[in-house]
Amino acid sequence: MLNMERHKIIMGLLKRKGTVKLKELIEVSSSSESTIRRDLAELEDLGALKRVHGGAILNQARTIEMSMVEKSVRNVQEKKRIARLAASLIMDGDCVFLDAGSTTFEIIECLVGRDITVVTNGLMHVEELVSMDLNAYILGGKMKAKTKAVIGGIAFDNIMNYRFDKAFIGANGVHIVDGYTTPDMEEGLLKRKAMELSDECFIVADSSKLHQSHFAKMFDLEAAVWITDAIDEEEKRSIMKKTSIMEVSV
Image (cartoon, rainbow, N blue to C red; front, top):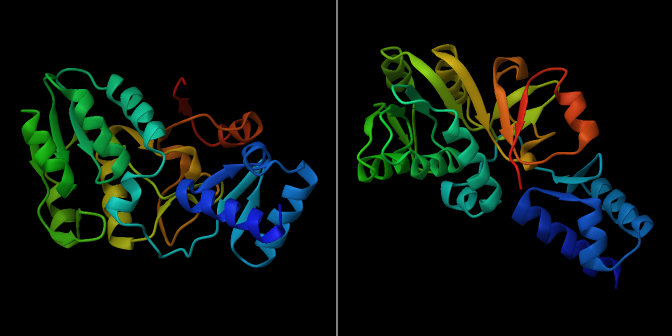
């Protein structure tokens, strides 16, 4: 297989998944480990990706954010498993904050018949919550077209009226130094306030977010438990020096 063909395969997988493992690239390209490592080094030099332990992640600008539609088709099965584990932590009688996002959206269908109260800033979440006949409130404020989130000063003031047993918050980046991050400062501030108003805070984000860092810091790793799919054991040990991790079972 030519270099160009391998590079196309690597970048195609990265754009679809956000992160790829070295083993996966070796299998799909039928290439040797040394060849793939050389390809990753070349693509990193071009600024297309960033090499990490055991694979690579897509090199994205800190302020660029995918739309809700784009997010909803990436790592779907991982998000559903994360959502099921997150939902299992919610007890009847809980008051819960569900952040706008594709992974938090998946939690809703796991809450059918539950005696809980949900507050959300997710425009896509509202119809789903109502259809499930769940007791729900939506924050008022500025509507963000790209991510279908309600943000801004009004939303920030509005959330101050609530106190939560648990908050489930999405993150675009999970970084051992930079903490949990997102591209939008207004959205980041609202996520931080939701964390502060909650007895327990959980980040729901698949492993493709690991090593990513975006423009707006939400809060440090220590402030929340990260619910995710399987990650490398060595990386897990490193992250767990800063925070707790709950991994979904395959």
